[in-house]
Length: 127
Image (cartoon, rainbow, N blue to C red):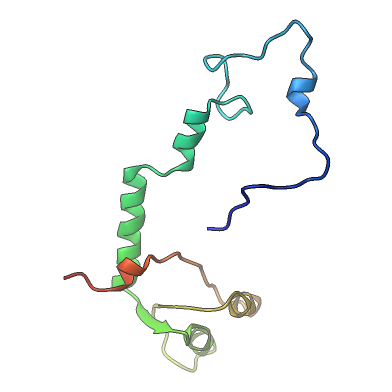
């Protein structure tokens, strides 16, 4: 997944919440922090960032369902999707690879596509 570990927004600015505190005031501790606020404890934020085992299992189950119920057309995905959309071939459930440009062209033509991250281990048959 794309990430941005460091973002440069120009000169360093002090966060608005800290700049408004009086000199004798102290920021609330972890027990006083509200969920979703900028003062949320790091552990709670880390828990929300990583999916639970149940979420991972549900995602893998959905991926396996997609793999078993679709035909892999590989690099011919854009051509096959267009052919089905315009009635040149019979509609069926397909999956494959398309470049970002091909995907945006399909969307502009009114063809629904969805990017789905597929781990390499799931593409192969299990023995």
